[in-house]
Length: 135
Image (tube, rainbow, N blue to C red; front, side, top):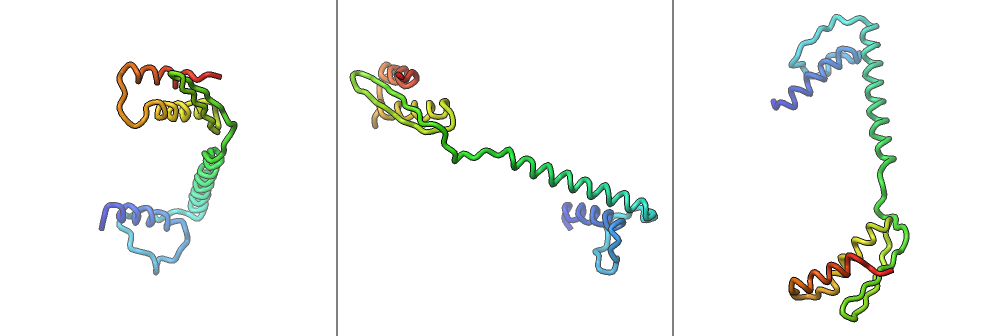
């Protein structure tokens, strides 16, 4: 028997002490607990257990209301770039200006860089242009 099974059976045997389920079809308990609880103790434990479960369900359902859908697009932003007489205009739709700016800057860099490697000076010029779009 694994450790997890032992822990499960231990918790299960504790809970069956106040669940009022007949013992003839339950698994044997690896742990022993005080089974001299009165009916009011069992009722209080059951209330506490139900309260805990209710709070847990509400906590998990409330977090689902805070989820943000990434599918929603906000505004369309236009970014204009000019390097060595070559102009580029990029339109990006995003939820915020910052998101659109990052996507447009990456596209600008890839456009001006081309397929091959560029010199350090040319790379710095491209970064400067793409980091500062014209309005």
